[in-house]
Length: 391
Image (spheres, rainbow, N blue to C red):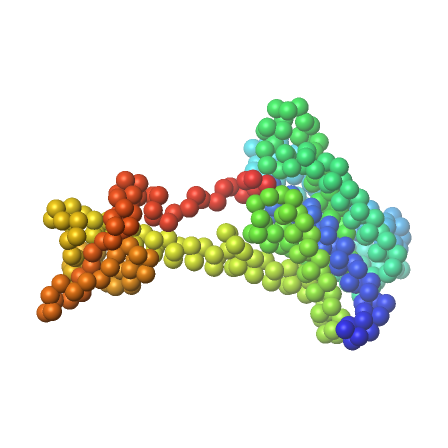
């Protein structure tokens, strides 16, 4: 513990950890709405569209002034978002096509401006290209205040328009029937996501910022179906990945902070996809295995009941090999589980014959229920509702 405190006593490390925490909060909160609106490419578009704004901010200020650069980045990001909304609303283009066009045009413009600035040899341009991949170590305390202000404004905006943003994210058509200004709300929400992108430019950079907008929200979506818990989980995952990446970068000198933050966020996504209850890959595999077992048990019980009915003897003894032959596979494990559950019992019919099985009274009752309604006893569960359902 004392070692960690001594480690955090470093002024630069404290700044980087604080900045990573702010980045995680704002990207998690606003990225949740981008994911639910099926606009995962939006973060990529807005981050790349910030590059010309960075260059314009530098040209206007004449130096590497962070407020001017972030203001320019926000302006061009919002402009790219509005261009995407206009293309999809007033043309036949789909959202992904509109996002791709905005990303390509604005990023190309940014590269041209960056090349122009580098060619002029203007004073103070050093480190301007660091916004492509981020440079967390150069973060100052004054930069943190700017990030904190932008983060606080974004969170307050989401809190003030929570119901409206929620309705627009899930059902914009219904929101329009209620008289809500859907176009204005969508533009506001998109601008807020652009603000989140701007917050992370110095920390993560233009190229990798898209991952921070999407990854925490994707991870949180695996663990819950409700919007409120999803937003809080996304903020927590964003903070965790930001702090983990920042500390790993500080502990291993020479490793860039931005990529480590993104790798930490990606690790959280991978764990969530694999292990999250209900939606995780492992959970799904276990559920399918359980359902196959339940289906096999139901089929064997139905077979034993059909044999008793066919022979007109409720205590008819079915030979193990005959059951295996009927199902085309070994049923020993299935019958063992049924026996453990009290549905069947093993008996010896004749000394020279193999094991036989008969239904218990409880097994006969369950077999009747299976034949009356196979789905009720097959171990199936209702499917998971669509993304966002119940949120």
